[in-house]
Amino acid sequence: MNNKELQLLVYGNNINQLTPVIDHPGVTIENTVRVKNENYLFINLEINEKAKPGKIEILFNRNNKTLLTHSYALKEREPKSANRKGFNNSDVIYLITPDRFANGNPENDNIPGLKEKINRNKPGGRHGGDLQGIINHLDYLQKFGITAIWTNPLLENNMPRYSYHGYSTTDYYKIDPRFGTNELYKELSKKANEKGIKLLMDMIPNHCGSEHWWIKDPPTKDWFHYPEKKTNTTHQRTTLWDPYASQIDEEQFKNGWFVKTMPDLNQDNKLLSTYLIQNAIWWIEYANLAGIRVDTYPYSGKKFMAEWVCSIKKEYPNLNIVGEEWTTNPAIVASWQKDSDVNPEYQSCLPSLMDFPTQDALSRALTEEEGWGSGMIRIYRSLANDFLYQDPYNLVIFPDNHDMSRFYTQVNEDFKLFKLGITFIATTRGIPQILYGTEILKSNPRTTDHGVIRSDFPGGWKEDDKNAFTGNGLSNKKIEAQNFFRKILNWRKNEEVIHTGNLKHYLPEEGLYVYFRYNAEKTIMVALNKNDKKTQKLDTKKYQECLKGRKEGVNVLSGEKISNLEQMKIKPKEALIIEITK
Image (cartoon, rainbow, N blue to C red):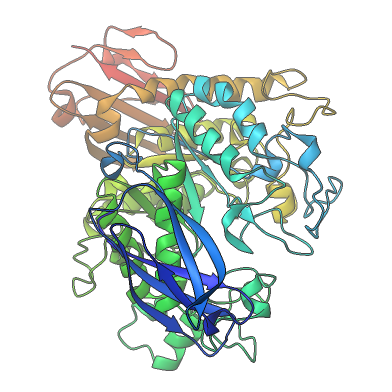
């Protein structure tokens, strides 16, 4: 690795009363840190170029007598591991809640020693989806045009209830046995890569689960924030950037617990911050990851998150990392991105962020009445803020995710508006992310319960009477939606002009929004007509800056050849993608 230092956290009964000894070529003990809790010992190693892969025998001595031994594996890296290519704007990310996608191995539904058991009748319970279920349906994703998978967290969540979502970690180095094993996760990565699909891991450096063994026996008194009196965060993320914010408001946001079952980790503790950084690097190397999605990104504070990301990027310069900053304020989102001009005094290494401002604008644009400041103009104005971003093309764009209402619900189950929205996500700048089941019009009518939003994917369980993987039992509209996704995503996969081409858009008129993606080789025209009553004519005179006198094209979605763009009309609530030919 680029960083030759390695910290080992050793946990055992009165372990810090013993002295560690290592006799291995290329590996030396720099120092040993003993904390007040005698059950913890931190060993700082230096691993130089002389070190060879193999077992490192660690002796734990007292008075020159060995009382314990432990074998630590020093592993060989894969060739060119440091130069791995991360996910980018040529990709389409498919977000999966593993417990709700497919149950590939019913034998791991209930595991002795893990508190919560399967209960598929309970929306917030565990339903049995697992890694094998994802592996079994990689062909479905590949044929869909998916090139990357982001799963909600898979690490052990040994919580008494509501553990299916994975955001309450109780072991940072162990896949939850109800999902599978570390080895199976590695197999998922390998088999996905064989099909041209990258793997992203959801990581949570901000907090752990309240059942983590650190809670029962913390290494230090300052391992957690507010250890004596649980104090929730204010969730007011703006305090980190507010020039007028008080210190107490900033601290209560950063140091407060996310919820009472998610204790807030104190990353100012150097031993803990090193642990979290090493853990992230270990998983990248172990599972051959192409990227990371970082949960609750701002909650850990500016200093630590810069250290966390920069440390990873030193080891993997081309790896992509996307942070979750849930705000509709683009200035705040932009402040986190690497080399930001918004807050240049803050040095960040973060390449990508979730584009919540554009998601919010899209949802409002499709459901509001058209007006001077409402309707499709919201998309236009949202993208007009791209001057704030150092790299807007590296933002992750999405119609919905696992924490918000399904997109089909957002657009009031209007299938035509739904297709307008998906067309935009597939053709504008950025990296599209699609939540599992969006392609079959999953919805959550009359409720915002997350257990309903993250409902089971039909066909993922043997007893299901409908199967979205095969289409059996699905309505014609759901099948039409699937076919629409397959068409547009597989087309996008090979279109460099959509990945990296320039974007130019025109002010919406009467609900008609037109934009172009173009480079030296190709020009694509996209027209979205939200007007529900009026067929509109495409005024090619207005678009000559991009058309440059060309009048012919091909309708990407229908395959129809267009001999005269000047006569083109767009029906109410219709989307057109036109490849300009000549």
